Image (tube, rainbow, N blue to C red):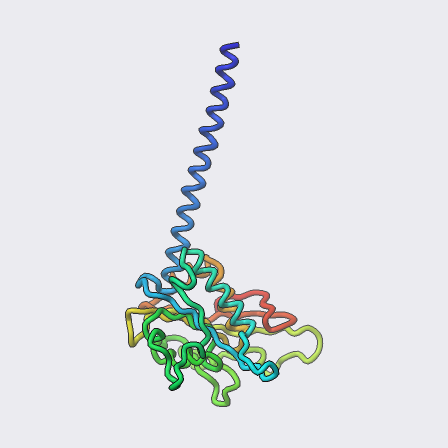
Length: 259
């Protein structure tokens, strides 16, 4: 009985030790993955400078409600960015803030002082986001240039290398008038130091239309994509375009890929 009892106890101890080693091994792998994730998120958003970060989205004026509204695509991208920052331990209100562009404009029409000091994550292009429009001149332009169309109806993403404008389905004249809406939009992803204040970083997530902005946000939601973007950084600049395909509705994104 003593021999059998000893075997049972040894078996139990072995099981416990095995489970403990398995747990420690998994914890070690999880810790490694978390550190890798944090590294890429910090690198992409340029957070090594330890400055406060400000997420700035656009708003549109609702004439029916006589009030400003948060565009759906901007809201979804803001939620994605907040999730990424919180995943590395940052806290809203302490480490980062979320504002609309008009929240940051003083009565005299100028932007508040903190706008010129904080890291910025700008959501939406210059057509709707006034701060994006102001900051574009502070970013290097190597492959793509973002601007507002002369008639102020849309954003323009211009391919400097190919000397051509990127055209979304909505602007191509090929939009289907019957059946299911199927098309694509383009979104620009930029991360670079402010060329006027090199001590802070500016990120831009902006499409030709809202679907392109949403596509840019959906693309960075995946860690593998952030890793790829960081790997493509050249001379301190990330500047890539994604193609966002949609079906049924322009904010129903089916897939997003680098152009």
